[in-house]
Length: 445
Image (cartoon, rainbow, N blue to C red; front, top):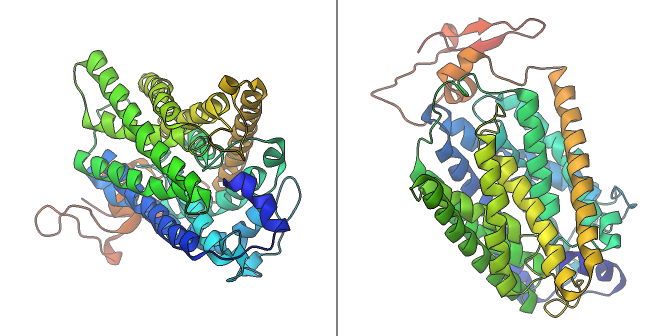
């Protein structure tokens, strides 16, 4: 059974741990955890070499910062018994989270599996602000965002909250993960403003092989992301697994064809992007639709995201790695198409969609999309304003010019010769922002 349908039963039945289900969920948890380093390679390859380490660290740091806050507080806010809007505090500090069964797996494993979702969701936002957001404020942002945005929406959809009780379908995170992250990324990109070089010079990927490696590892991990959301090793996991296998294939084919007929070239970055968009779109529908509809969904989902990226490139909006077009638009497309293609013939615990005679499901999906868009947008803006009142969010132009690797981390992804940049404490100069504390900067390049 999918997570939304399973959770009420977890509270009423006397569950027993099933070894086969536990084994599958152990593997799925590891697969989803791998997706965050995979995202680091995907994003890291898309930026300039002087920002590669900083971009990758924005993903890697979520493994620690978000993972710890999830275990200590956010898990309880998302999944402990509460009200329609937020979970309670019963599981703060992992109280009551042990080896007892939750469904057919240990409660502790369920917590860890859900934690991997929170980690990568926060990391996704970084793609909109890379090459210009200071590292410290970014870490503070993803911690607050996990507590104030991710945990409440996860509770609404999966933890017994109001969207779940209404019957909104989200098998593995179209709303909770991708719309949440995509909209938040858009707001963050607008709030920070553009990079100093944006619109003035071509900003090209420094390593397309990294992009392809990241996309491939993301696809691999996504089998745990979607297949694991069945929370058991059975027929439903197989359906989600196969739909995750097929939908990105269709998106890849259509994306490459669009690239070819529009530009005359089938680009590797375009193909990798198509794979990720297909994975995003199938996520909410993976356990509710047939494999043939998964192929159709993947093909349809190509068009909104492809043309959103093409349009964004002609504007002043500097969503650096097109997080909103890929995850926000892709997530909205997948969530709405779930309301079209869902079928109880494939998942009796779900609902029929428009094609099966239940037009109301499409309306419910639209409610889930709209509320998530508004909540994520407003709360992200509030968090950034709060942080901006106490510290500078954006690096100074000189820091951007030197590169975020050196100015934020004191190291380089690629050295040319023997130490192309020497950073010593005694040689640090400071640049002062009016009304801000002095910010250390390297003296020379």
